[in-house]
Length: 273
Ligand code: SAH
Image (cartoon, rainbow, N blue to C red; front, top):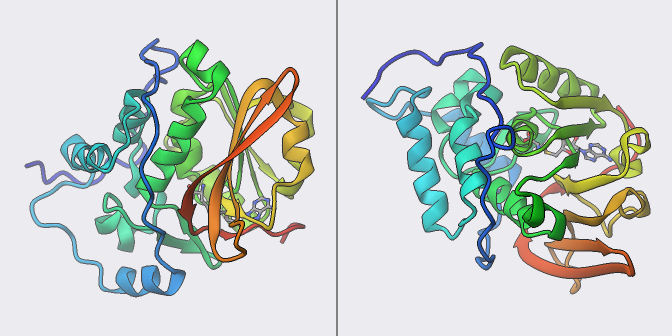
């Protein structure tokens, strides 16, 4: 197994959308295990031990993560391929790099976490099951709320014609900008602002995805969703306890809404900081 140091600054691969590599997504169905609470992620990070004999930048390490995602029920090949190409370890603190390909959420600073890979893959798979994405074989114009460290934006960039990603914390907006610049991630525009308002200048969007959950979905997100488009976001569960993914489709005659898996995301907050 390769023992090479991580290839920081490596050029980002051409998008799967560009390469015409996208196939129709498979039906959905698995229940996600909830993400770990922040204090647990921080505790585990403090005792990070490098996996023996595995070069973190090596494709085989990521392929093992992809195999686990597949075993956990993610079936959409383009999503699995994108997850296999984006170097997750480049988006976390080097002290946490050893855990980058485990299915765990990890702290990224300012009390926020990078979502665990199975949640990222599953949410993007939901987007793929949307009407226009299925017809086209890619996500089209994508809006992400909650840029965080930029990892999910990089995965989305592989599968979209353009990505706009909004972050309300300046420190994380700047961190993500550094990550995406270093990796030369294409087609990605980062915006510092309150994502509860969406981002009207580039609306409408074919795909909208949120990495933070509030009581319900802000009206601006629905307004900015294109006809044929799909929105996937966490929101408070109907019983008031915990969070559940909400999947909204916009059709010419209105919106349809359904519930997905139980999840655990950081709170959606208004304003900037
Ligand atoms: N997709 C990210 C996950 C980040 S965690 C990644 O791959 O790293 C969720 C992020 O949502 C946090 O950075 C938090 O600051 C942000 N957030 C919460 N409310 C927001 C809002 N109203 N607008 C924009 N970002 C928000």
